[in-house]
Length: 224
Image (cartoon, rainbow, N blue to C red; front, top):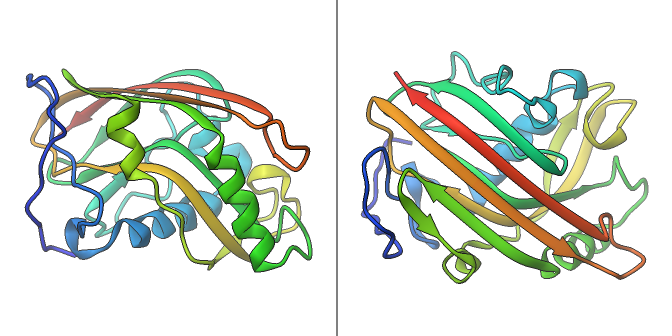
């Protein structure tokens, strides 16, 4: 968990309060991107809907379930669509996982769905993405930069709580497949990091979960 591999930036504009990101195919902090993504979903899906950072407009809940852990990565969260402006404090020395555009499908949300169906649904959703944008400090990453950061996971196990995310009423174990565009940063030095990510998709297939989805999230992250 403490291995820090060589990283690079995608020719952004250099600026203060910025931090580099790990390239796709690397192993930030000793784990692959896919392993970090599975950990991210295991975390966020374990939190009841009324306490979940996904539905938090201000950032007050950003550290829910992340305090007193030895993880090298702090997870930011997306939202359910629309605009959010959040403030969040993190420990310096941790990296950030930034979910620019993401999806998961589980057999809790779609009872009796096969693993193959979960893979197909997640892929179809993210195949429909038509915009991606990320800014960390003064470093900007455009659609073409971020396309290479797409990761589709193998199936993995999570445990939903009662009254969980995505309409899950009765909790319990579930099979999950995730897809999307995830970024992991190098460790944050002490300071303030304005972060802005947004994305959208249009999926006209009747099996799509969201035929027209757009998200726009700003964070003011302070590393202490």
